[in-house]
Length: 172
Image (tube, rainbow, N blue to C red; front, side, top):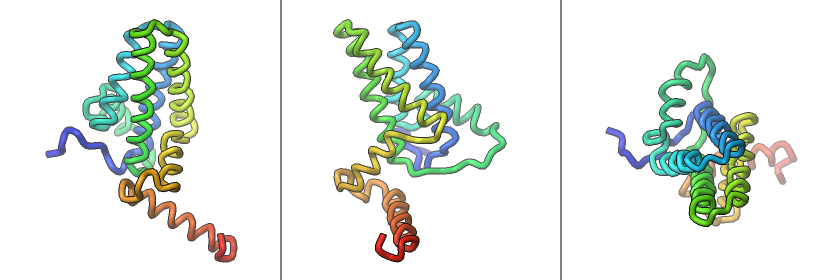
């Protein structure tokens, strides 16, 4: 039996992009209506996905059980730790937006935080560019995140470095 508090590794990139599209829809509705309960739904979704992947996330369940299996495409799989890190950034921003909006009455700060989420989720859903993953990889590169956290990331980076050295005569 799968443990409840696990995150998938690897992650289906199609599912990640579809979840991001759902986030874009939710954040866009908030930005248009500034309805408080949407922030709660958004924050819950991010926290649930950080803790359990799609298991406790309604949006994750809709995507992984309902939409992704029906797609007639070849799915690409990517390492899980960078995606979890990206969900963590979303959780931090969305929970901060809930606190700003409901706790401090700062709609302006909440809108700014949700706009940042919208920007990142749009990059992911439309272009397959995971901003949080890029930050994760940069932190790994400078040693803030140990390579043992994501051995697949480290081996991919090593492979790319070797390919780069070969393409440039061995010196990179």
